[in-house]
Image (cartoon, rainbow, N blue to C red; front, side, top):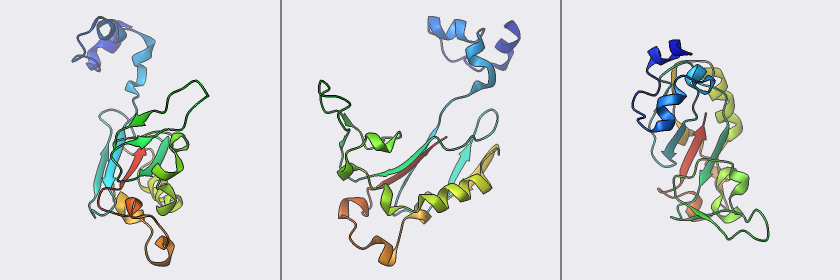
Length: 156
């Protein structure tokens, strides 16, 4: 395992765990999850990039409302309701319906484009806001899902 130390994957991690992890099987491949965010109204290209390896398939994707505190669904009767920040980047099925703006984004097209342009690449460019639905497809959308604070996210 000593050979993996040479890649300096955890050199900035000075905790006891970090010092030993670089010698363990847990560091093979340097796999880590990354989240990419983009405000829905900003037409800008995201530059997705892995420091080591290639971009993997999408784990989660979604769009969050402009409300500052997203509400998570209770997992069971004993859990308190949890709030997550505007930077939520996870399983959208955990969000309460009023916090989930995913249906106003064409994720089918986005996922197809991501798979064509990005999957297995070291880096790629993608404009997440270009997948926001428009025209008749956006009629009936609540303001908090279509204003300048709505965020689209993907997690690889």
